[in-house]
Amino acid sequence: MARHNPANERIKREYFRFLAEAKGRDGATIDRVAASLARFEDSTSRKDFKRFHREQAMAFKRRMAEAVNARSGEKLSKSTVQSALRDLKAFFEWLAREPGYRSKIALSDADYFNLNDKDAGIARARREKPVPSLEQVEAVLAAMPDNKALERRDRALVAFAAITGARVDALRTFRLSHIDLAGGFVEQDARVVATKFAKTFRTYFMPLSEQALEILREWCGELREDHLWGPSDPLFPATAMGLDGKGAFQPIGLARHGWASTGPIRDVFRRAFEAAGLPYFNPHSFRDMLVRHAMRLNLGPEQMKAWSQNLGHGDVLTTFTSYGQVPVHRQGELIRAQQSLGGVSDNSDPIAALEAVLADLKGKTA
View 1 (cartoon, helix red, strand yellow):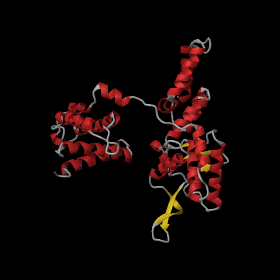
View 2 (cartoon, rainbow, N blue to C red):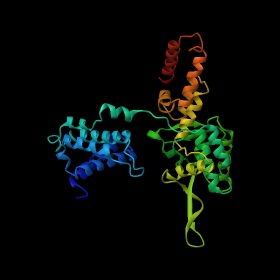
View 3 (spheres, helix red, strand yellow):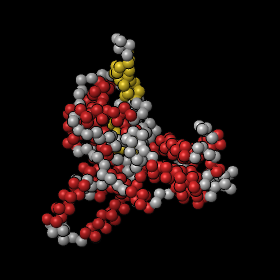
View 4 (cartoon, rainbow, N blue to C red):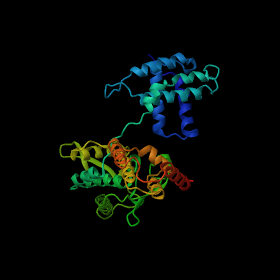
C-alpha cells in the first residue's frame, strides 16, 4: 500500500496553511487535524480526495466506533471520535470550495461526518474532573525535598502554579523579569510567554497560601543572588545534563534555558503528588482549584470579575462555565442545606436575585 498520495499531500499543505494564516490556528491544533486526516486516509487506502463520497464518511464513522486506544486498549471515547469527525467535516467543506475539487465533491456530503444525536450527546457530556484541594497542594509542597537546586526549582514550580493558575505552556516560558514580588504579580507578556490566544495580562498572586508565596520568594532570590540570573533568564530553567564517572548522562544542575516542551513540567507534578501519597493532578487542574476556592468565598460580582481576569478570562462567564462546575459532593451539601432551611435561604425572590447578578455581571463585562 502506498504510504502517501502526492495529490492529497499537496492539498493538505494548502489546508494547513489556510488554518495557520487565515484562521490563526496554532501548531497543536494543526497537528491534531493532520492526525485526523491521516486516520481517514488509512481507512480509504489513501484514495485521492477528489474521489471522496459520502460512503467513505459513513464507513469511517463505523471504523472509528470500533477503534481502540493504543495505550489503554479501550474503545475511543465519543469525544475523541467527535473531534476527529469535526476536523474532517471542516476539511471537506473547505475542499468542496477549492478549484479542481468543486465539481468532484458535494458540499452536503461533508455532513455525513456528523455523529448521531445520541453519540453527540454522550460526547458533549461534562464529567467531573479530578481537582486537588488547597490542603492537598500544601501537603505536597511540604513533602517536596529542597536540598538541591533542581528540587527547589520543582517545588517553586508547583508553588507558583498554585498561586497564579498559570497554564502549563506559560509555566515553561516565564522569565525572571516577569515577576514583581513587591507588587505581588506576574506579567503574562504574550511577546515571550506562551499564553492562550497570545493574550497579554497581569496575574496577581492569589491570596491562598503564604507557604507557596514564600517558596516563590526564596526561589527568585536564589536565582538572582546564588546563580546570578538576569531578567532575561528563565524563571523555571530546564535540567542540564552531563556525564558521570561511568560515562552515563545524568542531571547536573540548572540549564540556562527553559524547557522546550511541557512534558517535564507534568513529570514534576506527577512525582510530587506520588511522593506525597496522593493521586496525580495535572497542572491545569490548579486552575479549577482556584475557581472552586473563589466560589466558596461568596464573592461579589466585581470581586469575581477580578478573579476571572486574574486567570486571563475576558468574560466572567467563561470562568463559571469552563471551571466553575460544583463538585458532586459539594452539590449534595448545598442541596441538603437548602432542605434544612425549608427550600430557601431568605425571603428574597430567587429569580429576581439571579437576574440582578447577571445584569451586574453584564455591566462589568461590557
